[in-house]
Length: 161
Image 1 (cartoon, rainbow, N blue to C red):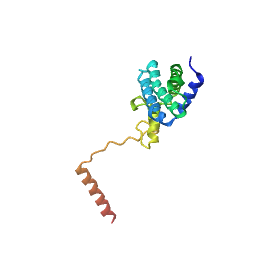
Image 2 (image 1 turned 90 degrees about the vertical axis):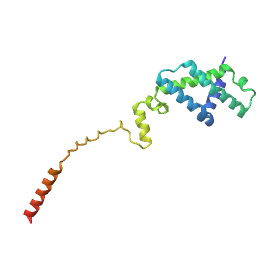
Image 3 (image 1 turned 180 degrees about the vertical axis):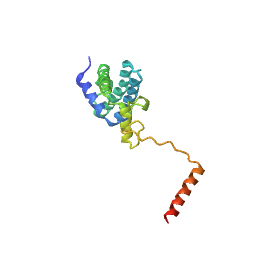
Image 4 (image 1 turned 135 degrees about the vertical axis):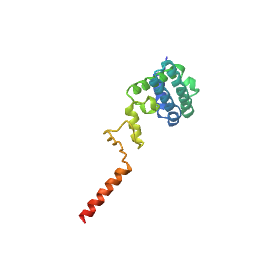
């Protein structure tokens, strides 16, 4: 039976450890968000992926705070419970659209893509609020027409003087 207090303690430790977050948590989020967007997400494999993070978190917790062997302090059922909690949290946040910025461009919703582009300070092709005015088709004026126009201007100028 899983120890709920130990599971909560380990979950909080993993959430608040900067190294674990940067080195494992973020890449796992990005990976799972991409899988979810592709439609190939598998819950069993996702929990197994979270288990790698949970085991490293358990080892690091025992190194920092002591208490014996990491696999006895946090038994398999407790670690599995933490992995399930992390997976549930991921699914809830993904459903709310929290990980849209972690997705590769082709899987990002347009709104997220435009927001990211604006934050980077660039222009986004699709996000223009007002449509750009269409350019007029350039009319090629023949050389003879240009000369005739110029001659008329000269005649008017002479007549005025």
